[in-house]
Amino acid sequence: MLPPPAVFHFLWEINTDLVKDGASVRTNGRLISYKPEGSKAVLSGQQSSAQCHVYVQTTLVEPFQPILGAQYFVLGEIEKTDGLTGVILHARALSNVDGVDLTLMQKAIREQRCFFKKRIPEINEQAPHCEPSYVKNL
Image (cartoon, rainbow, N blue to C red; front, side, top):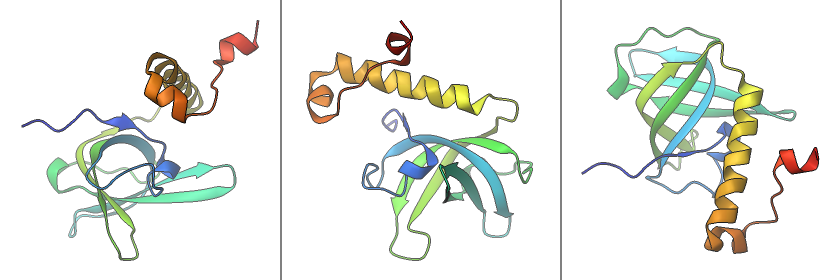
């Protein structure tokens, strides 16, 4: 059986209660560490002044050619742990996305979230009012 479709979460959202154990997620971050003997990598991202880290289990995507400092896009499942790591993302797909305009991608993801909040009434009732940026510019 196929896993459910993955929802895009920013790196800083993964360690919160927004993401449940076993959820399929998509995210991106800068590769800051990789240990091939343990099949573990660490992705880093920044929100405002806070630096966020997510541990990635790379067993299913090996072998791959890691480039430290490069941006990677990850698709996988979340495993919540009680240890120091907190959350481990078991990668099903891992892709280098250097050259992608991350600011534009984040803006597009926010716009998509606004669209879905308006289309699905259950989400719209629970979420704060969302106004797309193109309306603000009129």
